[in-house]
Amino acid sequence: MTDTTTTEVDAPAAGTAEQAEPPVGAPDGQETAGAAGDEQLGDAGRKALQAEREAAKTAREEADRLREENETAQTELAELKKAELRRSVATDKRLTAEQAELLVGDDAAAMAAHADQLLAAFEPKPDPLRRPVERLIPGAVPEIDTTSASDVADQVLGG
Image 1 (cartoon, rainbow, N blue to C red):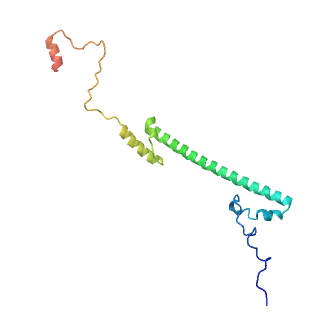
Image 2: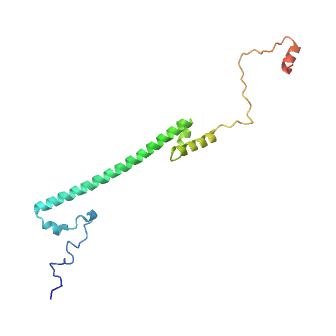
Image 3: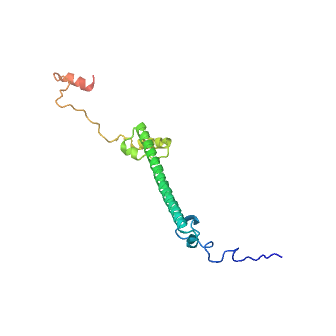
């Protein structure tokens, strides 16, 4: 008969480096061997492993930094495109600077519709109680010939 029991050589003992959790500073479980595995490598192996770990850490940090820069650049680009679209619609609709700042919308059609609403809202309405402005010229001489009263009456009465 064959022996089906496992010996200590076949299965790792409890608490060995193979079963241990990765160290706290080891993302993605890259440093699972721990100090026990590093001792078997020798000085050159330990230095190479340390250099590889540092290079991986530096690469992750660089990737994170570049990812953040990319996200920032994408956000700035979107803001600039929207500002250019707002300027274009404001110019086409002949809005004032104050009205242009109030423009909202995600595309040109929405901004144009909102610009029309702004123009309608800011359109000056005539005041029905307002008195008309007289256009007086200083030092002007009346055009009426004042020599005879009947001529003055005819000019005033339109007859």
